[in-house]
Length: 217
Length: 217
DNA sequence: CACGTTGGATAGCTTAGCTATCGATAGTGT
DNA sequence: ACACTATCGATAGCTAAGCTATCCAACGTG
Image 1 (cartoon, rainbow over the protein chains, first blue to last red):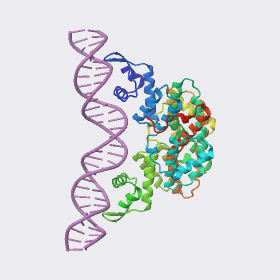
Image 2 (cartoon, protein in one colour; image 1 turned 30 degrees about the horizontal axis):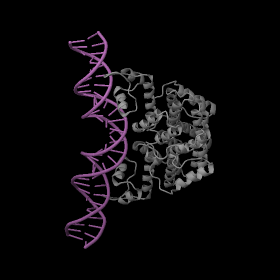
Image 3 (cartoon, chains in turn brown, green, cyan, orange; image 1 turned 135 degrees about the horizontal axis):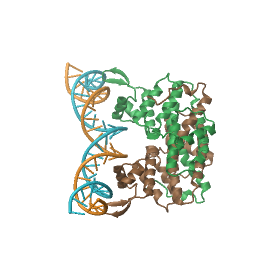
């Protein structure tokens, strides 16, 4: 086990913790007080840390996601669904008021893009919630730009699916789905920051290079 | 104050907490034991809850962001920067190994897109970090799709900037920048989920409608 | 055959984000 | 004028998440 700790960079108590929580499968027992860990355990630990550190998942959520990966007979669509639910354990999917304005905006958007989206897709409620919040804050012009955001989302989704199609093994696909869904949001957000800077140069006269550089505060 | 509590749906102790933490400016004192709160306080509370609940910011980070909004003389570019730093208090921007593969991928991408991005743009480190993590997990095909993600990011950024251009007042612009940056990530993520489902219908034969519906677990 | 290590269980620690209590003061209804 | 209630500010307490530290019995290696 100390080898596992060393190879993964995760402390022994933390490894024990993940074992307890069921994120990491137990090693193969060679005796009552000894277990053997393989490279798959190292990989698993890396995945765990990625989900938690980069994806920002809670331990409990990561556990659910890993469970979905581990079930080889689960349909891929289900894995997608779990990953989607998992990605945000925030209250984003709390109760959205029935016929809220945001819900209507989402429905309009789906109509105008021609998307096929099931009623219980978590994105529906998430988007509705966010749009309601925009409205609460008096930022009403967002609706005008929704089609542009939707187009971007479709581009991203095509790339996501293309990445999955690289695999033939179902287990690999499941892992790609999860990793892509969870890490993808972080990647997209980062790319967005860079693009924002680039585009702002084109829109605003003063170069952003004039900003106080380095980490703030 | 109880009116403020009622109007905003935030409990009195929480309001006191935000006052203590400096997120909410004190009301106008009418005596040593009474203060008057206006509609701007209600709005402020809504903004606070939006940043924390939807954007997932910590209280401390929200405080920094609000501070940036409140400084009317701060250049807009600076507000952008603060919002960008704020959006992820995760360890996403921790030390990225010097010449990591991810950093190189990011540089390549910036080169091939022709973006102008300053060296200290937080997206650079974030993206590098995520790409390094992909590689750690053996998901190496991601690089192939980076240009597609970048194109989507540029679309999004154009819409972001267009939203800001709706305003002429600098304070309004600052708020739009912050709200758009923080809530925008959540919105984009939700749209992505929907687009994923739509696109997956086109790629995979079996309809996703066959998935277990409702909340998982 | 003794001693160091491991696994498992239990308990403790730390931070974030509220929440509850308290005492002094001041406006309010009668 | 006077009891009553509400507010403010400060302090202390609470809960959950995510580790971390301690303990003990069992093993297995020298």
